[in-house]
Structures are given as structure tokens and as C-alpha cells.
Image (cartoon, rainbow, N blue to C red):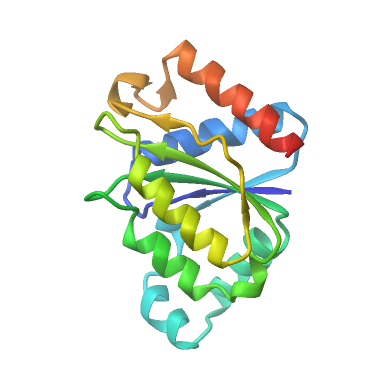
Length: 172
């Protein structure tokens, strides 16, 4: 089972569109997949969960999105030269053992030209600390607005690259 994690809590984000693209590509390969949109987390999770007050809503997320997964795809936008704080808060709220010895792929999303290179490097370090094996191929989607049209990816080359990424990651 693969869980795609949309690494932002912003509404109508480009990362959400890419997360949906990944979900469809993984389904196409016959793999079970679920998507976790951080915008759907309980609003108080960053304060309550991180301090040990576990809500039933957050327990549901851990049980149905994290524990059941043997691999993750993190779609990570670049915010101010790093990855979003909500993603770090989420990681800090989940018991670390739930990530141990699993695999992850990272996908960078950026309006700029680097495709979120720094956030991908930073988040790789976080995942390594959690004993997660990170796939070396990390697609960087630069100038993301040019690759999207409404809620769809309109760039054939980028879609082909993501499709190949999914196929190789599922073999990893």
C-alpha cells in the first residue's frame, strides 16, 4: 500500500493536483493507494497531537494512512526556501516508529526554477532520521503553473517523467 502525502495545508494547491496525478498513476500500475491531504487534518493537531493529546480523528489518520503503508510519496512544495511547516508538524505528531524501515519517494513542486531542490534535501534528512529509505530519483517540477491547466497536468513530458518515476519507485 502506498500513501501519497500532499505536503501542504493550503486550499486548491498545485501540490494537491500533483498528488492526485500520482494517485492515478499508482492506480494505473495496479497498486493500492490512498492520499493524505494535510489540509484535511484536524485543525488543532499541531498543538494537541504534538503534545500527546491524541484525537480520534488523528488516530484514524495514523491507522488508515500511515500504519498501513509500506511506502510513501511526499509531494513537497517550496515555501520560503524550505518545506512547509505543516509537514514538519505532521511528522512530529506521528509516533516515529510508524515510519521506521519504510520507503519514500519525494516530488518537488515550485514556482521557481529549482523545483524545490532545497526542501527535498532538507526533508530527505528528516526521513533518514526516521529510518526511512528515500528513493534517489526525486522529480523536481519547476515553473509548476506552466505544467498545469485548471486541475490537470497539461505537460506531456512532465507526465511521462512522473509515470516513469512511479514505475521505478514501485520496484524499489
